[in-house]
Image (cartoon, rainbow, N blue to C red; front, side, top):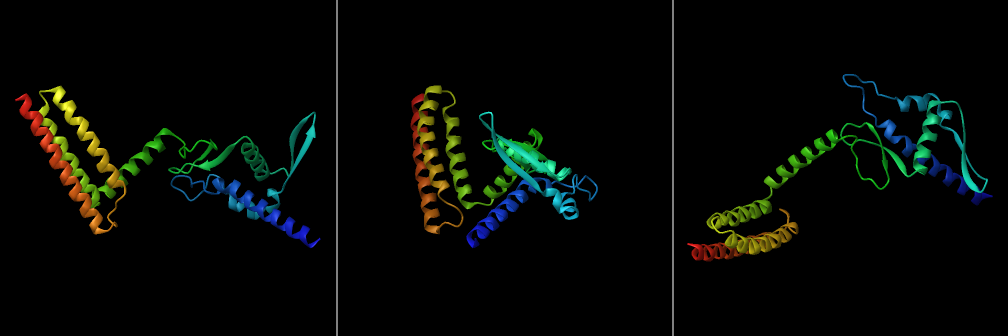
Length: 221
């Protein structure tokens, strides 16, 4: 009997957690613009009528198929819980747009966290801005940028010959990928010796590419 009580208590705890998670997107709804009023004040409703959350779910086997039956009080929260549960059974989840906070319904296999292309563009702009600031402050990024700019500028010598430019690009792209691979394994917190090795390697590759460009330029002159 004691073990059954413990099992029931654990089930009840899990069930209450599940209910809380299901209603979390509604709790996270933003306030109406220029006011302190939420679109739906879920916390107040729950505190005022906690029994509104009570929903009994029955699974019955009729006519060769399993069916779900819901029994609940006539309340908005109960209907809301049933609605969310039905969505969950259909592999849909209710969430909030990460930009504006509006409700979105998405497939479990869909990782989109935005309600519209506008919010997706806002996120992209914010991410790009943060990434630029981060890279601008990175010594490792500065080393790579200097290497890329110097070696990319060598292409100017070969403008008059598409064949020569293509030959240069083959080696340029090879060394660029190697440089990017090394850069991904480094940060400003990496040991100074590793950053210095990265800088030396970039200088060697830059010298090699400058030599390739000069040789090709001599052939077409």
